[in-house]
Amino acid sequence: MNPDTLFGMVFLLALVLSTSLRFWLAGRQYRHVRVHREVVPFDFAASIPLADHRKAADYTLAKVRLSMIALVAETLLLLALTLGGLLQWFDEFWAALLGGRGYAYGLALFASVGVVSFLVDLPFALYRTFVVEARFGFNKMTWRTVMADFAKQAALAVIVGAPLLLAVLWLMSAMGERWWWYVWLFWLAFNLLVMLIFPTLIAPLFNKFSPLPDGALKSRIEALLARCGFTASGLFVMDGSKRSAHGNAYFTGLGRAKRIVFFDTLIAKLSPAEVEGVLAHELGHFKRRHIWKRIAVMAAISLAMLWLLGRVIGEPWFFQGLGVATPSTAMALILFAQVLPVFLFPLTSLASQLSRRHEYEADAYATAHANAGDLITALVALYRDNAATLTPDPMHSLFYDSHPPASLRIARLREF
Image 1 (cartoon, one colour):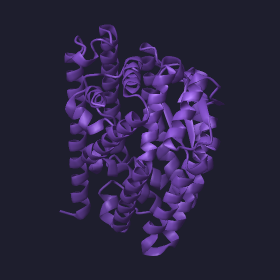
Image 2 (cartoon, rainbow, N blue to C red; image 1 turned 90 degrees about the vertical axis):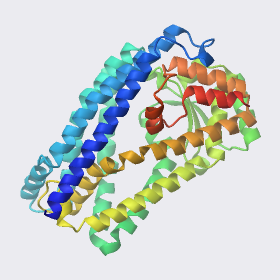
Image 3 (tube, rainbow, N blue to C red; image 1 turned 30 degrees about the horizontal axis):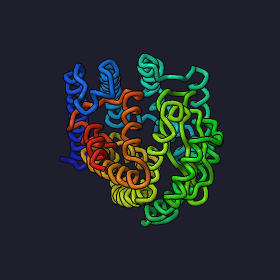
Image 4 (cartoon, helix red, strand yellow; image 1 turned 135 degrees about the vertical axis):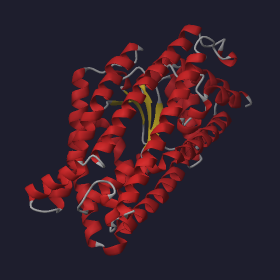
């Protein structure tokens, strides 16, 4: 058997197995949530009405159904791009039109894949926003807001994405066999730069940020920051309500550019003491260096993946096994980005497990600097108001959930 035929069969087998696993997990989640729809878990029976529990179950079931349909479309698109010959057609079209496989060809190739992927995902994104989210009272977006967001994202892709891609393609062509090392350094520096400028240059393109007004909440937050020894460039309220009724809080940026941001929906739903508990949890992520640990893990994985790409980029079987006849640097990047998630999906649970451990550590930090009872009531309110299911399937949660299941998390907090 030819190496390209063998690799194509290995890819197809991996795709079937990973897709089947994703369907199996979705089916487990659907059945488990539906079975437990009529009974509120004992630990939440006094704080979450049955009607809210049913709403959370129905919301979860609606999202699972949509995700399963989207998974079919996603899988069919991947097959069409690779073994179906769509990438080969793009390759021939742009190479003939642009007179070769240079930088312009690379930009056009990436743009083609991006547009096709956007068009396939668009119906699901719109249905998710204007049907699922609207049905359960969460969507606050208008068609004008959606179109404006699409336009801004497209502009960022051109203004930022195109120069970034050109730089990567140049490094791959100019830096010899160790190009992957230089691309990794450039990519890492770019990501750190984005984290630095995101709060002041990128985020304001999509939302309005206003200073947190003086009052009881600001006083509590400033006292908490003083106890934790945390310095921020400012406390801000974001107009999250213009897009969704969901609430949250986060800090963003690096160094002196760190900002603490509260969704206006969060402030409207929680008491100052409860908001303090939520922020204490977010500060726990910073104090336990979870952000830097995740950056380190991401950097190590990306270096390993770029090294692997460096090994296969010169192998004809890699291209031909995925339906592309003529190798090129840009095509190698696209193929690798398309097929890598298929092979890595079984490792998703490892990332989720690390994230859940960090959530427990952040909760422990929060209870040392704020009232554990306030954090518990805040989380229960967020579970209720965000229609988060209290009864996820254990296996589905193990694979996907970045946060511990509600029952386990609340039980751990009650120990404090």
